[in-house]
Length: 262
Figure 1 (tube, one colour):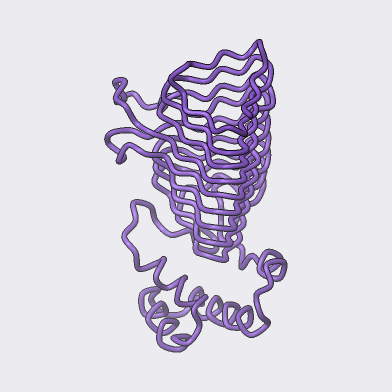
Figure 2: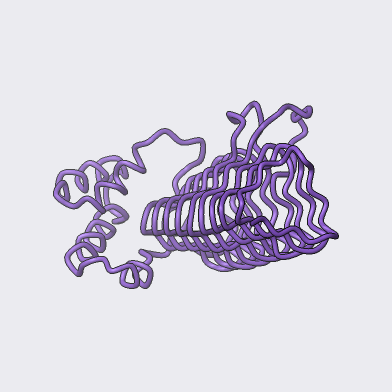
C-alpha cells in the first residue's frame, strides 16, 4: 500500500500507485502521476503536470516538474515525463516544457542524476545516462542513450549530444557532439572517441577499429569536411556505428558541430 509520511503534503488529486512511498516533508502537486515503486526520500517537491515512471527514486530537496525558466512562459500547462528506474539524487531540478518547444520535457529510464544536476525545459534525455554533480542542460538539448556528463559541465541550448558520448568535467558545450565522441574544455573541443566507454559497454574490437579509422579520415587536415564526410559514408557503409555518426552530422541542427581544435 502507499506509504505517506504524516509531514508530507500530497494534493488529493495526485495519482499515486499503490506501492509509492513518500517521505517526510515532501510536496506533491495535483497534476502529478507517480507509478509503482516510486520513492521520494524526503523534502522533495514534484509539481506541474509530471509523470514519474516506476521505481524511480527522488532524493532530498529535489525540485521536479517546476515551471520552465523561460521569460516567454506565461503559465501555460506543459509537461515533464520521466521514465523508469531513475536515481535522482539531492537538489536535482527538472523543468516542464514550453509551448514554443513543444510543451514536453522528456527524461528516459535507468539514469543516474547526481547532486545538483539540471534538465531544463524541452530537453529530450535518453536512457542509461549519467549526470555527475552539477551537470546542467539548457533548454531544448537532446542527449542520447548512455551519455556520461562530467561534473560541472554545461550544455548550450539546442545542442545535441550523440549516443555513448563523454563530456568531461567542467566542459562548456556550445556545439553538437558526435555519437561516441569525447569532449572537454572551455569551450569544449572534440578530443577523440570515448574509447573507455565503448570498451565498458562491450563494443567489439572490429567496431572500435572502424570508428578509429573513420575518425582519422573524417577529421584529417586535408580536403573539405563535406568531402571527407562523403568518403567516410562510402568507405564505412557496413559499420552501423560509423553510419550513426554520419547520420548525426547530416541531420538538421541549430548548433555547429564540435570538432578537434574548435
